Length: 163
Image (cartoon, rainbow, N blue to C red; front, side):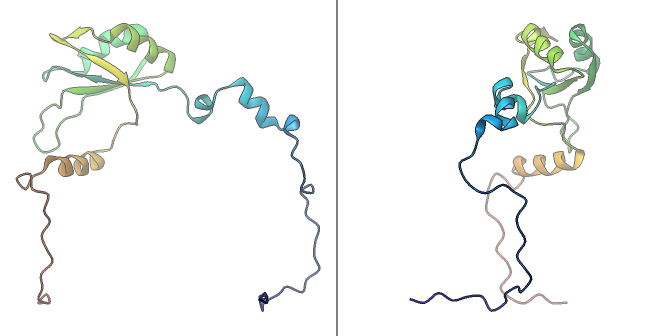
C-alpha cells in the first residue's frame, strides 16, 4: 500500500531545532524533580484553604454571632450567611473566610462541634469560593423542583410557531 504525501509542501530550508536532540531524559538535572521532593503535590496544586463552611447554624444567627468567636483565632476577612433568593429565609449554614489558612485550620479544630445559638455546629473546609447572586439564583431554581417535583420537560410544539 503506497503512502500519500501532502500536496502542500514547504520549500523553505529546514532549520535546526533549538531543543536538544531526543534521547534518554536526564532526571537528575530537572529542577521540577527537586521541587517534587521538597513539597507535596497537594501543596503545589493549591494553597491550604482559608475558608470554612459552618453547618447547622440557627436560623436567627447573624454574622456577628459567628465573627466574635471565630476572630479569637485570627483576622476574619468575611462572614457570609446565605439566604434563599426567593423567600429571603436563612439556609442554616454560613461561611467564614480567614486571611490566613493556618488560622482557619486552628479555628476548625477548636470550634468544631461547639454550640452557637443553642445548636451544635459542624465545620469543614469550604471547597469553593463564595458564589455570586446570579449563581445562587440558578442553583436554587434548579434544585427546588418548582413543578411539583416532576422532572418532565415540556415537549416542543408540533405545529410551526405563528408570528
